[in-house]
Amino acid sequence: MPSPSAHPEQEVPFCLPPLPLSQQEPARFDIPPGACDTHAHVVADDAIAYPMVPERTYTPHPATESSYLAMLDTNGMSRGVLVQISVYGTDNRYMLEVLRRNPDRLRGIGVVAPTITDRELQDMHEAGVRGLRINVLFGGGIGFDAMETLAHRIKDLGWHMQFLMDARQLPELLPRMRKLPVPGVVDHMGHMPVAEGLQSPGFQALLHMVQDHGWWVKLSGSYRISNQFDHYTDVIPWAQALIAAAPDRMVWGSDWLHVHTSPMVNTGKLRNQLADWAPDAQTRHRILVTNPQALYGFPSL
Image (cartoon, rainbow, N blue to C red; front, top):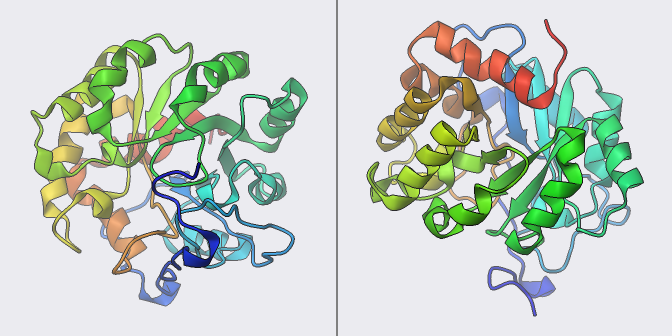
């Protein structure tokens, strides 16, 4: 039975395209060498060679390797982490091809079924994959049922599990997540509305996992959790609380190409939020350079 968030093939809505790079807001702070955008997607321009899964929630525009690398350059990012986009399900081929062509600059997060072979996992590791994604928000993802099995499969590779979930689910999942043999990385600051408040059970559970269990958070997707397009000032206390809790386990991501959202957001403006979230240049250096280097295994500068 299809996921509740999925649509029949003929009804899958199209996403807006990302803004042209010429419209990106210039940086408001000095971006350090080695800065990393830890969350973006690529989409091939050949729908025949790289078919999308019918149970997907949306249909994105192409976001090719060249477009993605140009986005990194425009936003001052020396490095990037690609996340397997849900519309391809467990077909990681295009992402892996891009990773293999950019071994020093890029790393990746894959999406796989529990039946994947050890050889396939090793091949992904050699291509630059450093984690697997659990996605319970969009059709085409792998859900919580596979979490423990996959975590034990990747433990010896030194990978982590990445979660696209609503943090309001965290309190009931904590008993399982505390037992995972690998670190967790939570997408988009928990992907729950900041209107829920810093004292909400979901946010407090997220802080608990970061402070007491060595988990990480992606400072990304503010437009997905804010009610204030497009300055998102209501996200500032949220991001600052996460950074204060564990500055050594925060990373930043653009979430380009900004799928399944309207109106379209400005990637440069999203990057510039770091100036408000982390006014101190040393803290921004941790978030942009030191932390992703440790999490994704980039070579030292």
